[in-house]
Image (cartoon, rainbow, N blue to C red; front, side, top):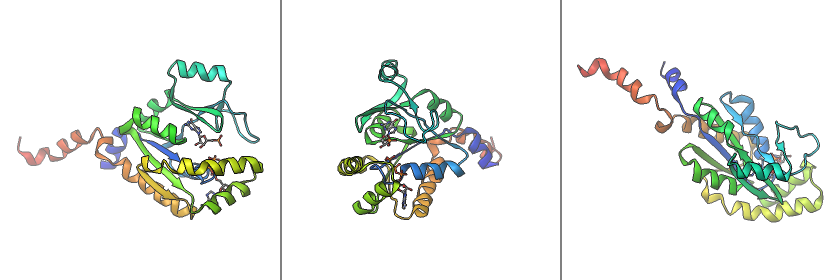
Length: 217
Ligand SMILES: Nc1ncnc2c1ncn2[C@@H]1O[C@H](COP(=O)(O)OP(=O)(O)OP(=O)(O)O)[C@@H](O)[C@H]1O
Ligand SMILES: Nc1nc2c(ncn2[C@@H]2O[C@H](COP(=O)(O)O)[C@@H](O)[C@H]2O)c(=O)[nH]1
């Protein structure tokens, strides 16, 4: 009964993942979404061209510069930033609907996006920075992923130290060495953050009813 009452009244949370490119955000996000039924992915808008295999509305909403600028002007984005020469932003509308309905939202954004979201929605955010186990392993992952040519891999590696330097703005830091262990740690963060007192607005009523018979009033 308690968990049922908690489920119905809980406010959702915003789980923000950041890392240097190639540390494993996409891999981790996909695995979390497979087995967390209360979690959905925030789909960003971007001006970057679609890559082979990417699907409009699943991976991103691919928009032109004018459309992106209009969204910024109309305050339709919760945050936005330039990453690797392209613009990215998080549509605001779907996030509030999900949180109100008690559903959690997962974000794969860079440190600038995480920082802006924290400024605007501090109590809803749970931020996790994912570190690679080593620089050599990060480069190995970028290369074996086989998606980017050598110059792009080099550029991502050159940017990694800058992204990593922002780890201290995050609530949690997880090293993605063994994927399963990393997932266990992030799931544990989710489990604990969901039962934070502030995320259970129905708690005072529940406790009041629970203790009524013993208070003699
Ligand atoms: N724990 C792990 N051990 C070994 N390989 C991993 C691990 N986690 C992810 N990978 C691999 O590393 C590569 C990069 O992972 P992924 O694409 O998820 O990174 P990313 O952080 O989302 O990168 P980007 O920011 O560029 O989108 C992929 O080929 C993925 O399969
Ligand atoms: N600030 C934001 N950063 C975002 C958003 N969506 C993605 N990203 C980050 O961009 C880079 C590159 O992503 P890629 O898919 O083009 O390789 C990566 O670090 C993402 O975390 C967003 O809406 N806002």
